[in-house]
Length: 559
Image (cartoon, rainbow, N blue to C red):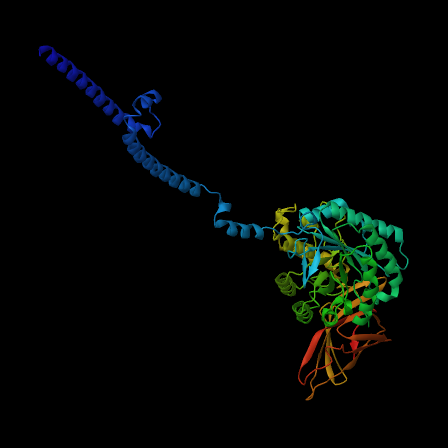
């Protein structure tokens, strides 16, 4: 019995020991189970207790996993917020605002970025169809001022003036003209150099068939065909060439005659260059874009030239431009200045500002006349400036300073161009005005020269007329005069067509006239209305007319 008790005691002790071991093991598992979710469990320990702790281990693992997922979500949320806070500007809503600001800083369309241009509706566009505006300068006659066609000059206009186009003006009929007594090969070589210099300066370039005294482009049509065939073959693969096929048709040249000419010249160019932009002149020194708008050409990538001189051509021509554009006609201002139509006389800053407002409102491309130091107001440089490059503000005429400000937005010396700031005051401006007027001012107090601004009144065919001398100058041993003309109807009934005579105290020769039809015979200038200003209502008047004549010094009007 005692042995049995002893055995039972031993068994109970063993059982108790086993239970103690199990209890200790469960405590260890309970502690280490919490650490399992953090990846700190000892593999050997886990293996030793696996069979005992399956259920408990699963419960603890489930709780630990859910807790870790919650912590992970919180960390992800915090990370996302951190990434959102550190996100670059271009990934947020500020991108569009900054892009708009960036677009406003883009001031020039250049061939390296915009490629070949084309015409879309009434707008000049780049290779991607974005509207562009060309802004630049025209040479004077290549035969007369070839020195300005050089690499340094063109580069300055691109880099310092923000110009992106240059126009190479080759006269056809004047002295040294391509179709008269000029050297064809020399003139073409100047064009070749000019195109290369413009290309190297990342500029567009206009090859201009500069008709003027030949009046009608059909006069030298066969020569024009040969010329544009040669040029378009040479530059067929170039993306920066525009062709201007007739600068300023004038006299009595009608739009139908110009259109007929263009319908023969454009196919010549298209045969070599399928899509180059072509600029076509319009009647009355390229002022009548309204006539072209009524009967446009049936070709793509064609634009229509409008020329103006702000002191002469005002609201009447401006409204013709805006109305033509509104009707869908693509207009290109391939020549303008801010003086009068002679290229001389005083500057009309007020009209110039009105023109620029309209030009920029419609995004019209423009080219200013002229890149020379000729002794006339429209030249960009003073006649005393003998440089062909390396210009300073002191070298510029008032016209040149105006253009520089238009293109750069700068009016103070020392911004893009060098110079002495103290010399930009009124004194220098007055000196420059004297320089622009040149011989006119020098002659004001000599002999019996008629003073600029002098007005003469007359009566003819029941109309009261006034002509005002805008400017006069000496040319080829003759005195040239430019007059503005206005007419008023003092009667009680309208005049539907008019014809007047102006009598001078000496013989005159007609150089040109605008907004009317002009002829000279002896000392009499005969003028009839244009097709758009023939009607003068009772008590009404018309203006924006004028003419240029040559005659004796001190010319006056007689009744």
